[in-house]
Image 1 (spheres, rainbow, N blue to C red):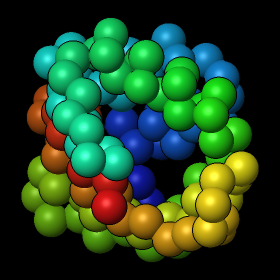
Image 2: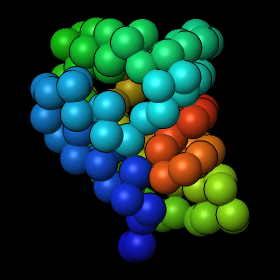
Image 3: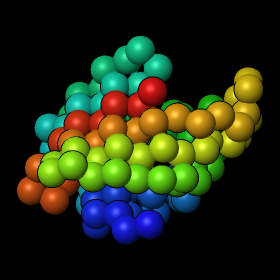
Image 4: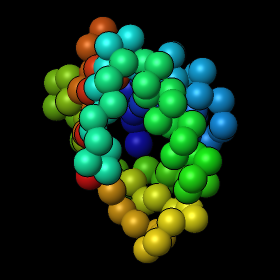
Length: 106
């Protein structure tokens, strides 16, 4: 599976508790949609990721990826300490200047 560098950085950050590494893959004004919430800006994204990692202690396993221009859709298996684990989710990334400008998780 070939992933754009920003997604490789994102998945590497998912494997650690270091939320500061998110600055290497997200744009400063990025927007994330997850669990019915809208998270705006890099600082808010770091807080969201730190809270999610503490609450769910999860791992992400990419299953497949499709890229169409600046939009990358990745299906992944999430397993962790949450009801229904493991589950499959779809990540939709929009890349701008090699950074994640938008992420929708469904």
